[in-house]
Image (cartoon, rainbow, N blue to C red):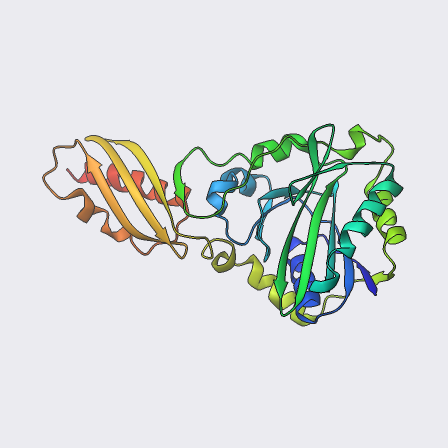
Length: 300
């Protein structure tokens, strides 16, 4: 069995590498650390999971993985682990994971199918995806994650959203350093290297890996792959109150309904028909709406 350790902190490259391991049907373990990012599940809506504006302002990247499950915030205080195994051997991963925990000096309690708890708080969550008889099992280990940043970025923007995707279940979280102050991310990685019978070497990212990484970074993957959803926006125009209802499909506005108490006899829906087909970047759309209302007032 081969073990890989990533020296790259780019979440898109790391997700691409583990994806390639799964498609190659290579029995492996992969350890990786990301720079600050929010990684959402395959069937989630990023607008419903994260404060996108806050993420952009604080250089927190947004990524979508191939597995299901909920959204997680990661930074260099978190260790990711990935197991790639034939489906019939998938249960072996639980033993390796438990052994690694024990080597670190912790004895956590599993919660449901996906979480590990200490002091009734979550420090690790996992997800999986299967393809062609092989399974990818991967998860997080919070060692000293910036919890203040986590709380701010995993608080969705204060918009009225009705998502058709799977939404995360928010949990109380804990860093392992609260339990074992001397524990480091390197210590956790070494525990995996001891627990898992694999020969470890640095992960080498090929040109194909980087090409896939750039695809995973694109808006068409991160946003347009979201299930359909609706959003509501209310603003005070110069001539009255306007309420907008957007329907979003494939990352773009597919319909908009407008209601207002303004006295303008022109149909408000016709005035804003140009929004249909635009990318569903909500803050930019809202700025566009407000500027359109202002410009309309100046012309009158």
